[in-house]
Length: 106
Image (cartoon, rainbow, N blue to C red):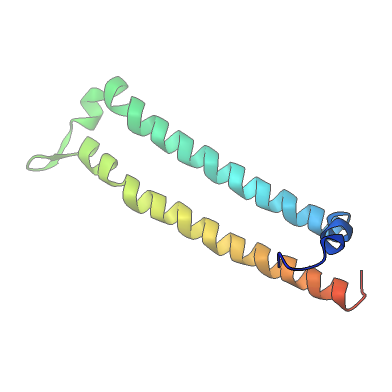
């Protein structure tokens, strides 16, 4: 879409629909950022402040701290999947808005 006339985006930028889409996108990004930050803060601070809990054995040498540390990989995968899924929706909404503009409906 970079090859399109820049006036298109100036006009679309004034649209209430695009403003709502941007707001939803920013809300999603900030929400996922805060969730990730809280998770990683717990990952860093948990073992030092809750050493007895994180040292509890689960099976053999495997303890809660190790499982929690390894869980960062599926956790990040889940956050990435949520972001991808939601951004596809945003992309569809923006594409629909551009089509409406080209049909003269805006």
